Amino acid sequence: MFEGLTRNALYRVGIYIRLSKEDNDKIVESESITNQRNILLTYLKENKLALAGEYVDDGVSGTTFDRPAFNRLINDIEDGKINMVVTKDLSRLGRDYIQSGYYVEQYFPMKRVRYVSILDNIDTERTNSTENDIAPFRSILNEMYAKDISKKIRIVFQQKKEDGQFLSTSAPMGYKKDPNDKHHLIIDNDTAPLIRRMFKMIIDGYGTTQIANIFTDEHIPTPAMRNKYQTNALSYQYGYWHPASIRRMLRNNVYIGKLEQGKSQTISYKNRQRVKLPKEQWIVIENAHEPLIDEETFYTVQRLLDTSAKKTVKKTYLLTGLLKCADCGGSIGISHSKKRHFSYTSCNLYRAYTKRKLCTPHNLNYEALELMIVEKVKELCKICMDDEKIEEALRKKVENNNYKAILEKTLKEVADKKIKIEKNLERLYEDRLNDVITVEMYKSMSEKQNEGLSKIKKEMQSLEEKLGEFNKEEKEIFSFDYKQIINDFLKLKNPTKEIMSKIIDRIEIHENKNVDIYYRIKAFEKLK
Image (cartoon, rainbow, N blue to C red):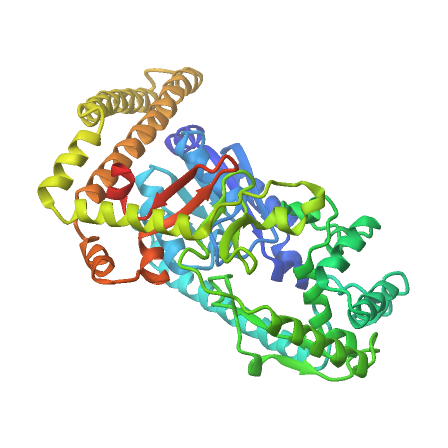
C-alpha cells in the first residue's frame, strides 16, 4: 500500500475532459464538463495523485484528434510536464478506434505515460488487466457510436432541408431570419431596397463593375461586413464591393422565393472536408419564402448577364493560373488589346480597384513573357536530360558539402546527452523507491533533470527536422523520376497548360518588371 502511494506521488497528472457538440445539443449532464471534472478530481484525491494540468475541449468531436486542449496535452507530455493521463472513460479520449488505440497502446507506453480510464477500469500500469485487453473493442464501439450519431444527424438535416427549413448561419442580404422561426426567411426592410436597386441597375444598363464601384463610393457595407465575418480578403477588409460578389447575388434564386440547399456534403464523419454535389442532387424548394424580386425582372437580368458573358470571349493562354503578383500576392490576369494587337499582364486586384490604388498594374507584354518562360524551361530540360551535365551542375550548386556531417555529429552529441539525463532520472527514481532520498528531494532533483531533458528533446527535434529536410532535398535533386515529364515537354512542338503546370509551381511578376519562376522540379530550382 505504502509503495503504491509513493509511486503515485511521483506522477504528474493531466486530466483530460472533452464534450462534443452532440453532447452539448442533448445537454447530457452525465457527460458535462462539470461532471467529468468532479469524477476525475475525486479519483485523484482517493489515489493521492497530484494534479499537474487540466485540459478541456468543449464542443469538439471525438472523431478528430486535432483538438486545441488535446494538442496542448501532447506538447506537455513531450516537454516532460505530464507523465500520467486520466479520462472519465475511453470515449472522452476519442471515438476513432485506430487513433485511440495508437495513443493507449503505443504513444503513452513509448513516452512512459500511465493512462487511466476510470469508468472502463483501464489502467496501463496494470499489465495483466482484462479491462486493458478489451480496450481496443471499446474503442471500436465508440467509433461505431460516432458513425451512427453522424448518420442520424445527416438524416435529420436532410429532412429539414426537404421541409424547406433554412439552415445557413446567416441570411442572404435582403432577408433576415424570422424572429418566430429561425429556419424561415423574411424580407429585411433595411437591405431589401439595395437588392432591388441592384437588379434595376442591370436592367438600366449598368455593369457589375460599375455597380461595385458605385456601392463602394457610397460606403454601403458589404454582406460580409454586415455579418461581421472576419476575413483577410482585402475587398472585405476595406469595405470594397467586388463585381464577382454582385454577379453571385444577381444569380441567387433565393430572391424569387426559391431555397436551394444541400449543394455540398462532408466526405465522411471522420473527414470534415466538403465536396460539391451535382446540381441534380441539390434540394430545391419552390415558394419557401416571400420573393424579393418578381420572376420577370429576375429572368430578364439573367438573360442580360448571359449576353454580357457571351460578349466576353475568353482566349486561352499557356500561363493562365501560374501568374502571381509578387507585391500583393493576388493573381495576375491576361488581357488582349485589339487596337495594339497584343496581350498583356495586369494585377487583378489593381484592375478591380483601379481608383483605390490597392496595387499597381504589373503590365508586361504577355507574348514576350511566354516566349521567355518556354525558352528557359527548354534550356533546363536539355541540361537535365544529360546525366553528366546535371550531376556536375548540381554538385557545384550544392553549398556546404560538410553541412550534413556537421548536423549528424551534433545530433549524436545531443542524443548522448539525452541518454545521460534519462539514466540520471532512472537512478533518481530507484533512489526514491529505496528511500535513499525523500519525495521532496526527488521532485526537486527530477524537475531540474526534466527541464534539461525538455530542452534536449527540442534541440534534437530541430536537428532531426533539418537533417530530414536536407536528406529529402538531396534525394529529390538527384532523383531522375522527373525525366518522363521532361521527355513529354521536349516531344511537344507547342507546350500545353497541363505540362507547364507539372513543371512550374508559380511565376511571380514584380512591378519593376522582374520575373521570378518557381519550379515543381527540385533540380530546376537548384539550377535556376
